[in-house]
Image (cartoon, rainbow, N blue to C red; front, side, top):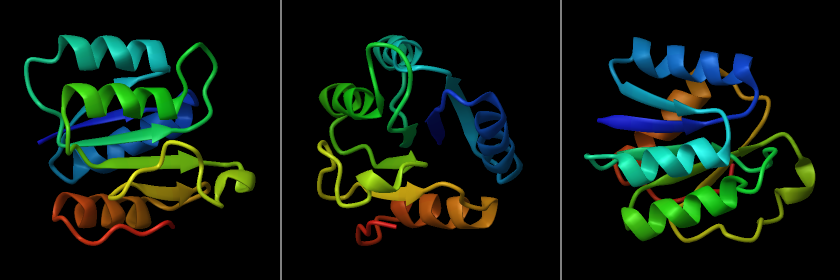
Length: 126
């Protein structure tokens, strides 16, 4: 199982990678939407889960990255993260099955939510 992590804040990205790596997951990382798009287009395998920050610098934000993932790999679970409480009312682009996790979140919570998504549990906005 390979998880694609898209996060522009290096420290947060590092922690996410460590959490999932320690739990036995393979992790691919991108620091921006453009890098994520290249990974999605070049991937020779399906990603099991996309974890993406919503707001990132550059032309492609997390919503756009999710759209690309949906086109290339329909049905891939998508976990959005954000530090902006104004998007917790349901950002444009959230689809049935997606989840939204507000920063800050702890490693245990992140791993629990991801495992629930991979196990096909019901979607929740968190």
